[in-house]
Image 1 (cartoon, rainbow, N blue to C red):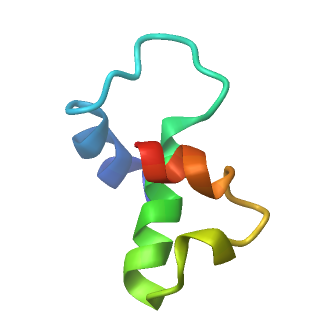
Image 2 (image 1 turned 90 degrees about the vertical axis):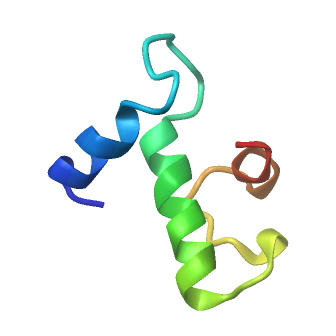
Length: 56
C-alpha cells in the first residue's frame, strides 16, 4: 500500500493508540487475501498472524 493510500484509510482507523500489531500491515494482509483468494490460515508469515488480521 502506498503512503497516499494509507493516509486516506488511516482516517477511518483508530491509529492513535500504540498497538503490538501495525494496522498498516493488517490492511496489507487483508488486501492480499482479497486479491489472491487464499484462506486465512494460509496467510504468509511476513504478515501478522492470521487470527489478528481476521479480528480487524
